[in-house]
Amino acid sequence: MNAGKISESVLKRSILRQLKSKNQDVLSGAAQGEDCAFFASLPGEIPVSCMQQNVLDPVKGELGTERTGIARIIIKCLNNLVCSGATPKAILVGLLMPEKTGEQEIRRIMQEADETAKQFGVQIAGGDTNVSAFAKAPVVSVTAYGSVAKGAELRTGHAGPGMDLILSKWVGLEGTAILARRFRETLLARYPAYLIDDAAALEQLLSVIPEAAIAMKSGVCAMHDVSRGGIFGALWEFAESAGVGLNIDMKKIPLRQETVEVCEWLNVNPYELLSGGCLLMAAPDGEKIVDALMNQGICATIIGVTTDKKERVLINEDEIRFLERPRGDKPLETDI
Image (cartoon, rainbow, N blue to C red):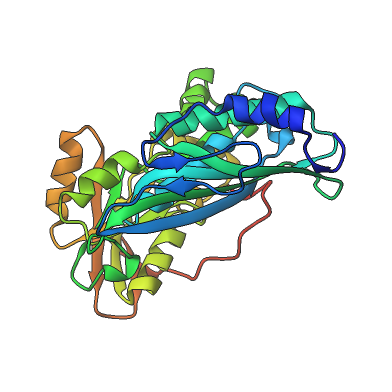
């Protein structure tokens, strides 16, 4: 494609015609010549938005194959939104594509984006698509929009000392799925194919929307999506925002066996592994949240407590050490 704004015919065929997701709170959304979306609002509602941006790398088999990878970015953005207590309504999608991009690739990306939006009851209300000679790989930006009732909004800083820390599902889900796909042949040298397939299928567990909704009804005070930097990174960010210390029982941090096996063979620290699909929560009564989640078939575990001290302590049986400040993000090709 030529650099610059995509043509009108490509816009109609491969973008606008792919958008079938709807949400009743979107009054006016994506259309040719319309640069803004309009949303309904109710008295007492507070608008909430967040954004995620990432690269789709064709080397990883995400472009030109069955899945493009945009679903992961959309889910991550929606996860962040619900951690504020908000109900998602719509997303805006921006694409910056290399000149070598074919129209079929754009159509495939938008089809997957719309399927994902439908799955979570949100509408793709707008966006922008451009082609650039400076883009080496597709860059996707997703902005999520929602609302929360005034007084019901959640911030990580709402957590205080003496609260239970709860994790939903398992840490390392997203990273395990990526590793299983990326290093399938390497892993087949040690493990049976079914284990690697099970590991790759963990990407189906990346949404934390169900557990966030349950936690909101069960006394949660703060929520944080565990993602980049793994559980160690999430715990550090959580403690920094809330101004609390931590006592964490390492033995209680939940890991899937697939994650243990994949990380061991590839020499990856599972506690620093990309962990989309895992929700970190704080509440005065963690057992109440655990029971509520388990009753809905969602695994949950209390892994520790917040304290009024500065130390972030990791306890592994008789060994005690301190949580370290997360290192900077690695390049995308190894940031897992």
